[in-house]
Image 1 (cartoon, rainbow, N blue to C red):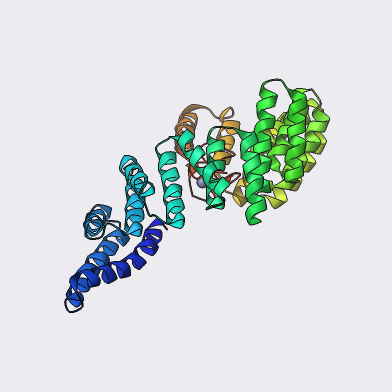
Image 2 (tube, rainbow, N blue to C red):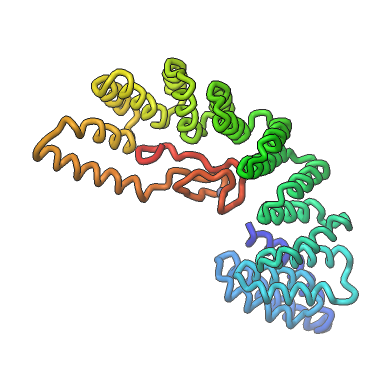
Amino acid sequence: MSALYVLALLVPTAFACGWWSARRAGVRRSGEQVSELSSDYFRGLNYLLNEEQDKAIEVFLRLAEYNRDTVETHLALGNLFRRRGEVDRAIRLHQHLVSRPGLSDAMKTVALLELGEDYMRAGLLDRAETLFSDLVAMDAHAPSALRHLIAIYQHERDWHKAIDHARRLEAMVGEDESGMVAQFYCELADQSRQHGARQDAREYLRQAFISQADCVRAFMLTGRLHAEDGEHAEAVDVYEAAVEADIAFVPEILPPLLNSYARSQQMERAERFLRDILARYHGVSPVLALTHLYQQRDGERVAIDFLTSQLRQRPSVRGLMALIDATMDKIEGEARENFLILRDLTKKLLEGQAMYRCSRCGFGAKAHHWQCPSCKGWSTIRPIHGVANE
Ligand SMILES: [Zn+2]
């Protein structure tokens, strides 16, 4: 995408260069000059599109020398420097551009936006924040500046400011940010819960639900508050509601839900609910939960029969592991040795396996995160469904 962005910046410049050099070289010789510059340009573009950025930068730098007034060339170069991680050079270039007299307001604000991105990349968040706030105040590129500010406040975990700016962005561009705002309230609720401010936590969760009525994380945190207060029957209601809100989160919801079923002595309800999930969810988590339940209530035989029948329908390495564990006690001698090897191999197979993947950027993770560590998307990390995963 950024190659295309740079391309979009450069194409008009190619024409501008042609025009400029035509004037300089005189009408008669303009043909040669234009073709020389244009071929340089297109060579640069070609390098850029082939991701040969070193060569592209070399070509464009030379062009910048030909034509120092071409702002677009500078902007494109700055963008290239930042992409290459040469943030200092990008900052110098954009600062130089911003300080140039006679620059139009429109171009100046573009350069300021770029400079803000340089500061973010360099980790100079204070400077970036000031710059983006100025742009918002000037109503110049305000939606982009607001998005950057929201990213900064998320990074600094300043959830109040993040909420405030997300709402401003919503009002400005009519984009629905309610899911993200609900996550910010969940962050505040969890923070309060950890500091023992339980009333504040409840209030933030109320706000999260106002923002997004089916926010799974808000359901889960509410369940957790109930469970911590010993209100396990209430916790069960809320955790079941979390499953209904988004069944994809079953692997996250089941462990605390099963604990609250047991603590509130509602194991029949647990079996009914797990059976119901089994019919509409294709991962292995409810199978393992039911196997455990049958093992406790009806003994090994019933549990193993259930597990083997399920594994035929949904092959799963985690299921196989549970089967090996359940069968191990009954086996002796050489067969037991073989089983131990099999168990070891299965364990190793699971160890290197990503269990979750971001539905937006493809980032693989072993544990669940509410915010993707890579693309910073919220609620985008989902369990991977497959033989070696969920
Ligand atoms: Zn991601």
